[in-house]
Length: 148
Image (cartoon, rainbow, N blue to C red; front, side, top):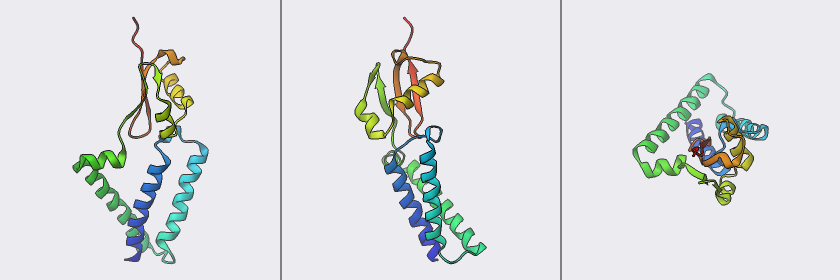
């Protein structure tokens, strides 16, 4: 029973920590961020399983984390304000060709990340971008300026 409580508490603690760290998508993650993710997981699993390394305990922990995640996503869908709070909302970082530097800073996203997303859309220069939005999953969506 102790492992179940530890797993649920660790899920919510890691969820909170990852929300504080920001919303970079996995595509934009650097090597340092991958190291952070693996270290968080490695340290957390030690706290969850303690000395009980049995198969039964492992299954209980996996099921607890899975069911906690299912419960969290259920709450996100049922309570719209909670969903927006847990997963965030899209944030415009470029509007009508103007940077929102304070939003970039708050999201810990660099202008280079936005330009990388623009290049993936075939845009080479900033003046070709009408708007850019950081989506809930951390991906950057680019809307090019219309010709004419």
